[in-house]
Structure formats: C-alpha cells, structure tokens
Length: 175
Image 1 (cartoon, rainbow, N blue to C red):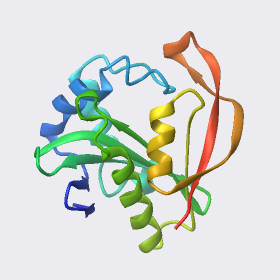
Image 2: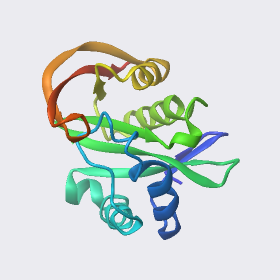
Image 3: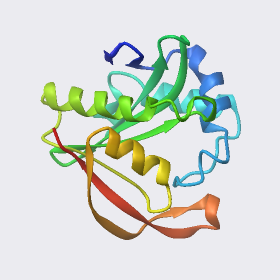
Image 4: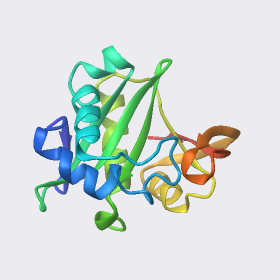
C-alpha cells in the first residue's frame, strides 16, 4: 500500500484489478460522461493502461500515475486516483465505480492522496478540477478539503457529450 486508512488503501495495480476496474468504471459510459476519454472497449485496454500508469516509475516516466482505490472491507478495487505533475504542484483526479458511489470513498481517497503528497514533499500544493455540471465530484472535493478557486472555460473536450468543449471548476487542497 502507498497509504491507507481504516476503510481504504491506495496502491499500485495488480493484474487481477483489470477486470473489476473495467467492469465498474473504465468500461462504463456513464462514468466517462465528464471525462476527456471514451469508455474502454475491453478488459485488455484497462489492463494495458494500468500496467503502464500504475507502477512506482510511472510518475517520472509519464508525468502521471494511477493508484487503485481498494475498499479494505470488500478486498477489491472500487476506483482510481490519478496523480499528475503540475509544475511544483500535483493535480489529482478520481473515479469511483458505480456500485461503490455514495459511500464517501471519493472524498476519503482524495484527502488521503493530498495529505500523502504534501507530507512526503512530493508536491508544494495539490489541485483538481471537475466539470461544472458534475455535482457529485464537486461535493467529494469539498468534503475532502478542497476549495473552489475559479472557473476555466472550454477546458476540455468531452467525447461523451458530442465532443463539446466543457467548462470546469478548479479546486485547491487546503490543509
């Protein structure tokens, strides 16, 4: 584990994570609604992505790293946290699989990630952003200790919404 609480562990992927992560999150069109990507087409695509981006070297090699969010009581992957270099800061993004939403996992994983990055000196600050219509993500960010810092117009293109350019709210973690 990279870091853990009583309920959650954040860790690098294991090969057995590909199928559950695909089934509950990466392959789900609803989960990709507010993302700049299409849903994955199969378990193999999710496995390749995790193998490339979820290992101790991926942050240096790719400028980003994906951590698996494991619910300890379920002993399974329930979502993903992405950590990306952003100058002296780190940007964090998250997704929780549909069956595990509404349980506070996103807020807890975000807070654990931000605290870990700051405590280990890997970042001078931690930020995030979410689509202006993604109320659930906005709530999770605020519960995790992030504060709204502004709005960025036409920040990303959403393939799940006809390729339209979407505005986002920007957030900064406050200790």
